[in-house]
Length: 584
Image (cartoon, rainbow, N blue to C red; front, side):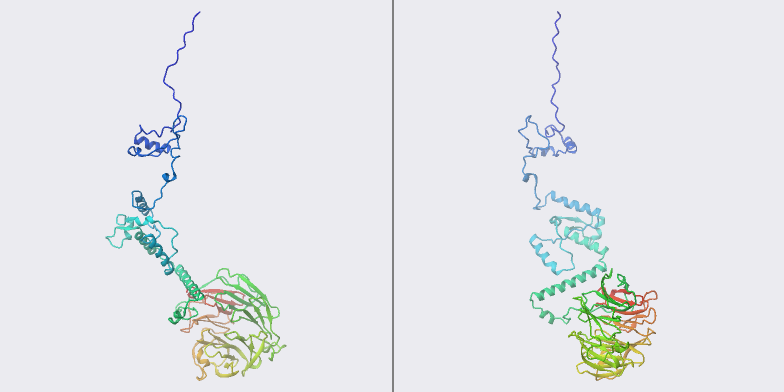
């Protein structure tokens, strides 16, 4: 029997257990620098030069079964304080040179680099300077929310970079610090891109508002402001003097119609702005017996409210001087009032108690259209029949007549003078002007209008400078308001007669500072002119032949003359912005 030959044992190289790729990456004994760089790129192992490798301590896991290191756990037993550090800018080291290189390279890519400004001082001094500069320099922007303290250590060379040479103040300038570099960048940027006008105007308005709020807070806190008032000759009411308007050009811009949100069905009888500058409300009264209120913002002009008065054809509507109510009158022997705060309406007794108003005839005796409040709003003067003028006590609220005045002819217009002692002026149909003293209840002066024919309308300004009288022929006589009520002087002389219109004058309106006068006639289309009061000359650039005025029925300026409202027979209220006053 043949014996099976003994199987020989295979002899060969020892088979090692497969090792995962990258498990022996930490064995740096036989690696050179090039191999370490390659491992860093492929496996993300931190690269350290060979000379520095002995200084790095690697903590391995001694509890591993095979004693081999596990990848990614070499920093497991390190403390957080050993892994991270906080740069407190203790000194200028090699690592602190990186921001300089970064800033220099960034400047080459973007020339208009702006760095938040920090004063070159220590931390305590920096905080005190910022706190002092914020209230004293309102033109500056808000303080930066964060500043980099390393910017102080930045050094930028202006001569070595061609794009930065324009920042030098002198040819010898070369290296500047971070703060100075930022200041020059800001100066160059503002030189190329100056501040627009609208931003400067808005900034000035905000500064004035801040000053008013600060002065109001000082007065409420009990601080003594009397020395400040006595040290200045300015007005104590906070009013600012308007800039003078040049005669050459009237700066005006058309906006969206004031009543576009709720147009009228008939012609506009009257338009009036609220007397308070803080309430941008405009009222319009139209032939459809409706009074509408609009919030004027220059953009959408939203409609606020509509009042319908079926029993009264509204031909005249005015705000009370206090701004709390509205008076509505027409060709009827009664009037309506509307309280803006409570929303309640009130109708006066028919014919007014103690007067001779007729209740059946539709003539001047049955009309209360010609009426006017005194500047305080305590007395309402109403023109009646046969030259009578009734004085109504408005404070009582019961339409009680407190006195009467008498002229020799029917009164066509009334005006309260602001130049004298508050006299009441009346213009009769024979062009006579009566001056009544309300306290004495008698006429103290009477004079004839220049020309003496067809005078029909009074118009005065709120400053007590001018008094105008419009006639049926289109002429407008301008008088000095003080001379019209001067008892010692004779007949006042006209400053000038304006003859730009040829039809009957229906509207005379001054703006708030008596620099502009609007005259208009509703007998002919596009009959309106804007007069420069200091020179008593009409502007030539507006209105033009393409201005869609129509037949103008009423004109009014806003309280600060920012807006101009023009009503016409088509039921539209044109709205214009006066740029001269809106930019103050």
